Length: 121
Image (cartoon, rainbow, N blue to C red; front, side, top):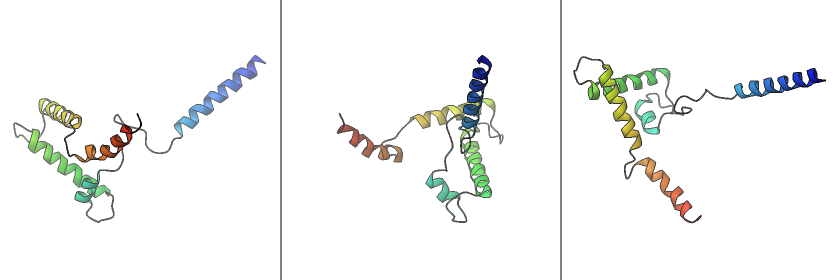
């Protein structure tokens, strides 16, 4: 009887594990699951006008970001980011992510939500 109970328990645990691994979509990354690029990025790099970025368009986007990062953070102008320059870039980008400027789309999107909360006290 104990053997049957142990086997049933193991089968149940195995089934739970398998169903957890069978989720749709890619596993979340360090900052959560990645969604589509913001509309302004799609508008800038979507050359064929299909509303999404192809592999070529994504490659162009990555190259443009790389050039922007070099222009902004490559202080010794050697064409690559040193460890110190890379760390400075990470720190600056982290600071920018934490900053929410007045009038930003993120803040404007929160206004209706916050207004709805005011009436729910």
